[in-house]
Image 1: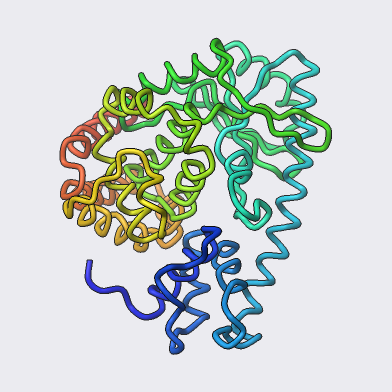
Image 2: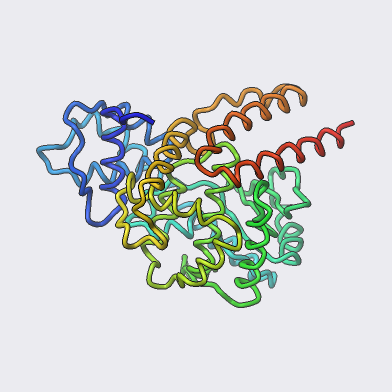
Length: 374
């Protein structure tokens, strides 16, 4: 990855200013920056609200024109309305499940949004609920009649997505990734800590108590989500910002010894250190606040490769042409295999061991899928 251009530099400068209470220590954006290009990058990475917060922090003499700021402010107004509506829906959903005697834990999304200075300025997505196996089945039976559409269920991972009142609700009986077997084993153990060990915290929303994972468990779930999309072909900065804000907010509550054991058990300490360098080098996070951060240059080199991939793909593959998904099964299989292989070639330079493991698992899953269609 070469030197960032003036607009990308301006984007990161504003992102840092919006992400942290202390503002951007790296300086103000260059006066020659094209803010329409900054907006485009922010939209690709689903962090328009954070960049808008950065713009708001600029001294009056450094602020861009009103015309340049207008797209950011218009998006922020939409984000606020959507977040308020989603929060109300989550409160209603939590009450419905509680009344049925079903214990559900909100993961990712609106739960992590509580860690931001302006939770309503975070781009929201789906409603992800984690349940134990029995709760998953009961919740599916309870909510299915209210759904306008239901996606195909993934029985192996106990996962299904339902659209209810225009919101996508994802039910998770596990948080298994499709790529890392060792990580899946850890996720099962952490899930047991949440449900059997009571490792939860509470978010009060419209008079309802919405359950969230405790910090020690939440940080594992959020980082696993990052790796799932990194190895799966579409990671955005919003996900990395979520992880960074979670660590920043609950740093004193995270047991570093427990976290270290978990990362090593899952074989993802290398990934953690590389993303720690990314958070420090590009997002402006205080390195002292990041567990297991290392100033060795090799981690910064890995971070630059990851950033290059993130900027290329966009949040959930925003920048990629996915029209092939409407083609025949054979075309979808060939294109997916080729894209995954090309991505893996780049990942190999960053995380060689797990990349090889992930690639072979992808091939095996592909073979199994083809057999099912024969």
